[in-house]
Structures are given as structure tokens and as C-alpha cells.
Length: 280
Image 1 (cartoon, rainbow, N blue to C red):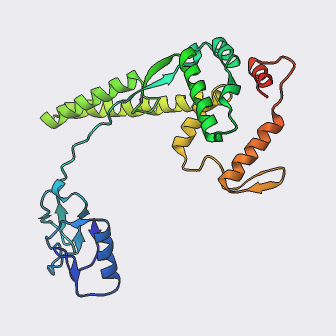
Image 2 (image 1 turned 180 degrees about the horizontal axis):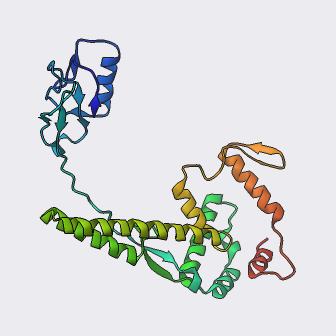
């Protein structure tokens, strides 16, 4: 929406007798399936310069002109948009509850797993991988329970206290629209300021706690970090031992080389290291 200064365009048929940038603009409108819905001249000369573009014209009321009490080159245009918000449906997901998993039973099961029976030199490596993956998944399903989690549609610092204030503010706003009394306006403003203060305090506390948990719970920190930045997870160019790589495959090989170089089984061998010895 704005003053496009294109008086020589027939917006009903997207036609013009002009060349150059005007035709290019009309092509853009057509390519993005936009509709110009204002046909009310808004200047003293009767030119249609203030345009309103949308891709759902049925949601807009007819555009009308508002008379002004002061001199201006353009009149004010007004319209209404019929918007019905559709809240995101809550989705329940089943995830592994690793905190309550039987890892001793899982390791014993995998140690006894006949890996050699699934390795056949006459079948492809992809088939062998699928067989091994299926076996591991069935083992995890057997020894690790699952739990139901709900996707959160609100930030994690929005707790029950904040939601209660939000509900009170919405009720106060509905009362204001119904009565327009000064006392109701005062109550609404108090609740709005209180909610804003509470939100800022909860957010600050959440960020401070993230800083304290950056070592003990880095996953939570980086999850919040990725919501606040548009940067890629990995830089475009990486290096290891002065070997610079850029492609995804080279990066994966470089990580593999690094982790292989630092991995070792210490004297106090963990069960996983014992498994590595069983399957060379």
C-alpha cells in the first residue's frame, strides 16, 4: 500500500499505454498474483495514485475516501480486513525417555547381537546398514521407554503467572470496548504495564539462567541461540591442521578425522569401549 504515482494504468485489466518501468511493475504484480483493490481517486486532480495490493481481495472491504479538515495533496483512504486468526494446533509427539532407560540391558542385548549374520559380501552396504539400523532401533524400543511431549507455542519464559496476567488484560480490554469508561481504561493500562514489566523480568531471568547452564546444559543454550540468529550452524569455510574445506562432504570428512584423532579408550573403560573391542 502506498503512493505509487502510476496514473496511466488500468488496474482492472492490468494494462497501460506506457513503456519501461511501468510495464515491469505490472509484470511483478501479475507474477505474484496480486490484486489492486482501490479505485477511489485520492487527489484533487482525480488521479488514482494511492494503491492497495493484496492476494486475498475477498478479505477486504471496499476502499472509501475520508474527507479531511485540512489541505493535503492526498486524501485518506480506509478499508477493513476480515482476519480470523487460526491458532496452531497442539501436536503430541512420542519421544524416547532416555533418563529412565535400561542402558545395562541395552548394552547386554547389543553385545549378544549376531552382527556377523547380517554381514553378507553379496549384498550392498546400504542393505547391511538398514538391517543394522533396524536391529538397533528395535533394541532401543525394547529397553528405552517413550513419553508424550507437547509442542510449545509460547516462549519458555511464559509461565502460568504471565498467562494469568495476559488473561486479565484481555478481559479488561473487552470491558473497555464495551463501556469506554475511564475507570476501565485505567484498569486496563495498569494491567498492561504490569504484564509488560513481568514479561521483561521473566525474559531477563531466563537469559541469565541460560548463561549459568551453558556448560551443564549446552543444548538448551544453543536452542535459544538458534532462535535469535539467522546464521548457519557451520561457517562456510572451516579448517583443521591448516587444511581449509568448504563443501559439505569435505566438512564431514574433516569432522570424522578430528573425532577419530581424539577418541581413545582410557584405563577405566566404559561399557561402550568394551563394545568397540567386541566389534572391531
